[in-house]
Image 1 (spheres, rainbow, N blue to C red):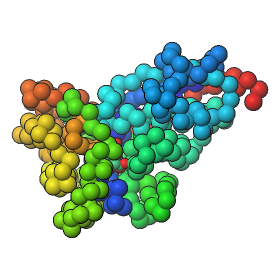
Image 2 (cartoon, protein in one colour):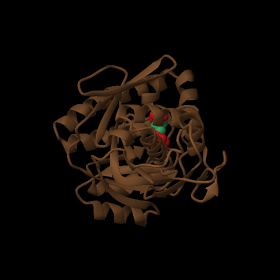
Image 3 (cartoon, rainbow, N blue to C red):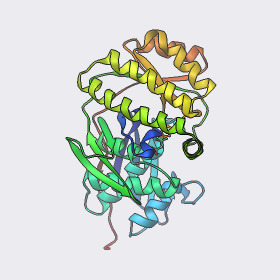
Image 4 (cartoon, rainbow, N blue to C red):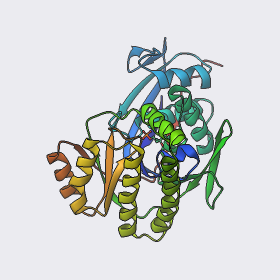
Length: 315
Ligand code: PMV
């Protein structure tokens, strides 16, 4: 049997702007997607036959990255799905890690590339932020320029993203899930329409880009007060782009009195917000009172891992 697992992620700064070549900062969280893979009579996921409708990620990966006898995959996850915490990225990384393990083991760089291909081909449009955070663990900075501590670079069409290690000070985040799914392609499309039509949208994206560089500095300086202020500012800029929602704002306001700062995370429209706080229980209780689902999380340095082996049927 092979076991592979990968962490959830949160985007701390720069979502949406990263689609336009601006930098973004993401962190891996201490919740994981674990998959177990064994040889079997036929391909299956969680004991049901593999189908295109139910298993888009596993199916694409097994058809395009794997060449061998049928496998049975079982999943177990502590990452709420469609919440903006990267459950599909963690699944993509775990599958890429498991297939890599079957093929004799792979590097994190290769795993990040394969997991990005899985997400990109299934979702149509994506930056490698989520899959790289889930592969590497800890913190990452994605940018269109090469900086210090580069881990790997990934390209699609004429776009290249350079992924860097970014050391993040110890911090506790409270995630507040709105109970509404976030549909990334819809929000990305919405911003794309606004971006094409409005100079104001383009300026807002520029401003998010500048803010992310300030955040890199604040994180390096371990200045949580400044990091929190920048989170609030980033949330306002995302609101201008049209991806905030009443529910997200309600949870952000609930967290504000006990937090350094808070913002929506990921594509928005629904999904989750994050608050940076020294009082996670208070923040979690406020989020719950306002109808959200809170998760107290911390940054996890552990990225993708894969161990074990399966009989490869002589191939
Ligand atoms: O919805 P999430 O958490 O996968 O985040 C999407 C982030 C975007 O910047 C909106 C899109 C992307 O692929 O980077």
